[in-house]
Image (cartoon, rainbow, N blue to C red; front, side):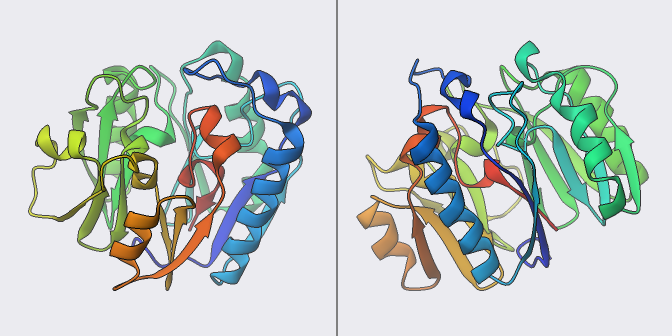
Amino acid sequence: MTIKFEKALVRKANKNIVGALSSKNLHPSFIKINNEHTHYVKALAHSGLNVSILESLDDFPDSIFVEDPGLVYKNTYISLRPADKTRYGESPIMAKEVKKLFDDIYTVNNGNIEGGDILRINDHFIVGLSSRTNKKGAENLLRILNSLGASIEITNTPKNILHFKSECSLIDEETILLTKKMLENNIFKKNYRFIEIPKGEEIAANSLRINNNLLIPSGCPKTEDMLSKNYNIIPLHVNEVFKVDAGLSCMSLRW
């Protein structure tokens, strides 16, 4: 099941995160983002996960966002290839660090692909091509996942959306939370159930279902009210994280 997890992997923030990639040209506070990350890790543990914490990588400002350089499936770790040159070194470092945690490790050797563009639904993966993920990288991942028994479809992330999961997330085995833009682009081919985010709270589209809890960004009262009828909501501050184009899913790998 996609929403049931026992373990999580995170990485400590580094002081150079003030220079992390930002389409908004914003610079987060290390102290504030470290505080957000601390509460995030506590929420993972509260949701029943055994959390492994990697040390910070000062040479890589974006390295707190462990979802982009790695993917986990069936206790197998797949090392991905981030697109920006400032993140090139993260993948080989992380692959070495997590070697003892997984049965097998595979590597995407060609193209570019980031975990923020990969939505998993059970044994099916949807990969959105974007400015960070290209066709060559997606096809390389396709071959790896197919060899592990998973299916994969490659689609296009709508224009002006950084990552596929910036504006959608899986909140139960058949329900996708998404923005109006994602819904109107008819991206999803299968018969999923959709919940549209209220206008003005698009940041909440990147929420994170973990076991019995649903982690959502704080400051989204309409979304919280809508979802609290069926889900156990844990609101978390991601104001600083959002400055560098990231969200709740970006800061961990779960399996």
